[in-house]
Image 1 (tube, rainbow, N blue to C red):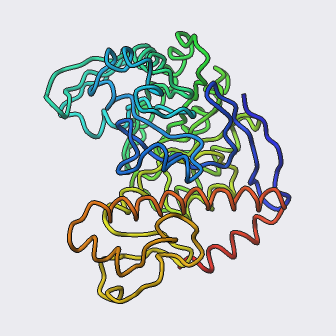
Image 2 (image 1 turned 135 degrees about the vertical axis):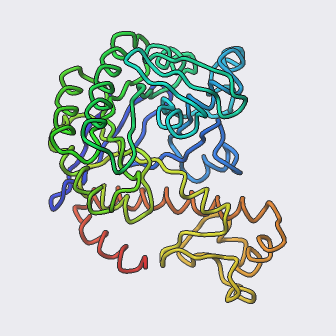
Length: 364
């Protein structure tokens, strides 16, 4: 169930509360990505301390390793990974199309070779729902066909129509308390996006995701697609922008009416020594920080910033110490979740426009 609690008076930004079997989620929210059942380098306790209310895992990866039987015997995904809060599982459609060694797509489903061992698998949309229900996920995503940018209209049309059909079939077999979201595809073609939005709305889902953005298209085109699609989605359901993004993209999408985000950026950048701060990105390996004993971000209250200097973090990265990866990843997740808390506060006070201006002027 989803309730819109408050709408900002000067934008389309909104506060919401999403209720799941494992807890409530205040929106707009950011979901740290734990693709294989773990947010890389971080423990569940650290995520909880940062204020994470939900994480994302990937059905494709977990289906291949450790497999359905192991997770079932563990008592479900929550028990297996020791995470008591909500979990959204992505169907793995994007991974099948981007990682699989070979794949054949038809209206029945997808045949693919595992990128791990080369074994062949065939999954129907019904299989993907049953896998996620077997995990005990709180929010599940149907199998969809994601296309890359640029994409010809004929190909985009086939993928969009297949996504609608797979969404309808997924809804037909979905039979547990998990929330099922529909995924809007259609590449960069407004007429396709509109058809997909309207037909998914007619089928009826617990929430609606916008897929197939942030796949190489220019930023302004991404924003235009998101804004266009939101005009055709139910306003009493959560809106999820898949795979986005960097802080400025999140702020801009919140302004358009997006409620949920996920992205590997904070932990991937963290493992490579790039920190997100209130003044912009900072690459800690660089020489200016050799004797810089200030924290990564003077405005941050995370464990990393309260206890360690830039000089020490630089030392850890330049000596290949694993602690460096953990500490910067921890800071980045805290930064993202704090950004969402501040965003929600600004919406509640009807000052989102001012907040956005202040944030972007400081975040260079």
